[in-house]
Length: 251
Image (cartoon, rainbow, N blue to C red; front, top):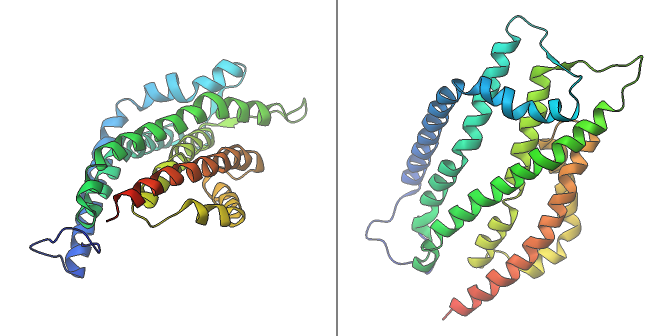
């Protein structure tokens, strides 16, 4: 993998070698996710009781979770194990991704990788915490107060966990937008002017993305869309700073 202007590599990889390296990146990441899922199984009951169900019990102690199939409890714990593995394994996946593209970067850009990795994990944790501590209680309060004497909610555990974990993962991922903007602007592949011109298209794309990755309801879509639009505006200023540093580094 070689970028124009990067230091010469005594052995430049071919396209097939790139594919082979990508295949091993995917395999290694998959092995880590499977291992984390297996380890998470032993903590899945604790996570469900003390973490994931806690917002429901704190704000709506009168509601209990139910399951409608004999294997419902088992499937719920499996779901928690898999989602936990994905969330916990994201830093490793990000490290694999950055290591894969590192040979195509300038030497000064490679020095940024540890910083970018740290900021990537931090932004994901901020997004996940915002979803868990702020957005999830608001969403539960909005949906559960729509009931009435004739229409009382019975919450199925798998649906609740899917709703909660998708919301947390979605917020964690979209909070990576400033990091992506910084990296692309630092390499000269993105400018703040381009982001400003494409603001209307970006907002439309954000709406489509929010509808796709959140639970299928308008309220969840808006809960994700509004912070994402704000993050886009923040990313423009991040691109301004990174773009200025990119121009200063040019000969």
